[in-house]
Image 1 (cartoon, rainbow, N blue to C red):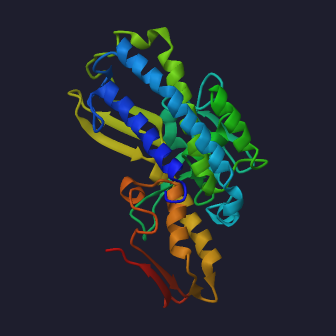
Image 2 (tube, helix red, strand yellow):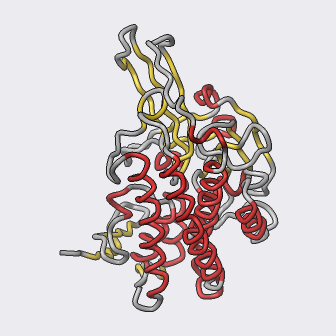
Length: 344
């Protein structure tokens, strides 16, 4: 922020833009009650639509100049690009039914490999259990999802911004499509370095701003029919969508009264669990020399994990201020070295 105050100001302004849209739609910025079962609680007014449209040019300009700046930094971070969870894996996410473009709340599952070739396409999200299995390790509370046909752990895959830009044929908006094409030219196949999750996020921000504009200019955006009301008519349902950090799979069963009887959730942090651990291992191998943990490792481990944006409590800590301890063990289980950062 001290070196690039304009970036800090732009970031705050862009976040303010997003929060303002939430408030305009839902009445408040934190936990609005606008989205309800069956749709939304009230229609969008013409005044609110025009307010959002008026704010879009500034948001679009911020997204574009941030992208332009970010692309100038690659030469400064060649080591990070090479070592930040840069390994072959599968990539999974939703693509549009119509043209295989970016899909955030509908579409079908597509999986591509590290070369960019499609491994599986048009997979039914409701049948996720047939192609996504979960392994359990004694040293972790978090399960390890994997692509079942390839087995564990070979079926490792990643979700989120990097995965989404690797699996789609295009984003679906003019400026984002141009940026997506440039992004995909980073490598011959899929873009593998998790450092580029940040790059992919910026492309998706631009897409989001353009997509908002497209939707607001549709004539039916002001329709008064915004909610469908129904009693329980199916006792089981699966919903799959794309959250900012990756694919969400929610599976519920209910009784005749609409009460939930069972629930199974595979969220983005779970999908990326294998990849996050492999990324930490890659960084560790890079920063361990002669049985000693080298300085800079803690920040690198933290930065690798953050590329996946695994949880709010982690991502809201200031970089370099998160309590962290790395222990190095020998093959016989004896402790060789410890690197620790305490924050009070």
